[in-house]
Length: 253
Image 1 (cartoon, helix red, strand yellow):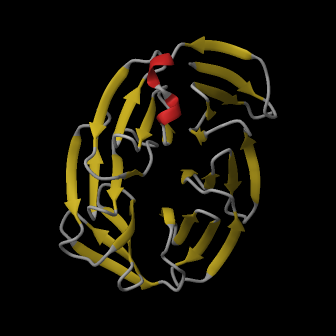
Image 2 (cartoon, rainbow, N blue to C red):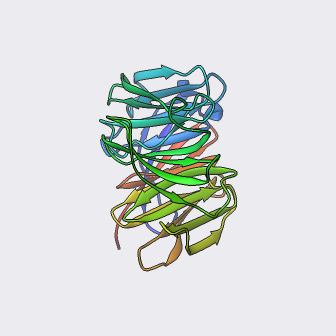
């Protein structure tokens, strides 16, 4: 079931309601929402990644054979998914049709995290050499590499933007420059993923979302203590509570 809210503080009355009873949201391990009204569910039980509209209609679905980490659906025309197990990056279109797959094992040691910056470049963290690598995958060309002095263990998400590296671990969010100097660090509870909107970075945990901006300010912007999973797109916060998906419309007041 999906329920819409207008977001002021954290609580207000429901405006719309749609049935989503067949999705079994209790088995969902990751939630994504694009800016076109569609949302995406990843389930560890069958390694599936499926796209739905707000009426419970499944639009498309992928069945992975090994675990993959979907980067984001911020641009649903180009969705990146990385598998540390397979040492592979895949690119999908808005219908979850595979466009390309890149075998990283052929050219690198153990890659612990990959970030698709655009349709030309990946940023890679190579554990064996402790390097951050800018890799032009179209022609298999390493553009730059940088030695990193932070630990590579338990990295859950990474974004590289404007010469800064944003790293999310289970209990830590940190920002480094390309010389590996620490710019910012914040302890968190259970880091799930990062979401970027312009110069703002949203740190998504189990039950809450924090925002970090270019001025170095960190603030909590959303919280639902009953949620199993929370997420955000440009206009809404989202929360899965039991077998219901709640959508809180963001109003800048």
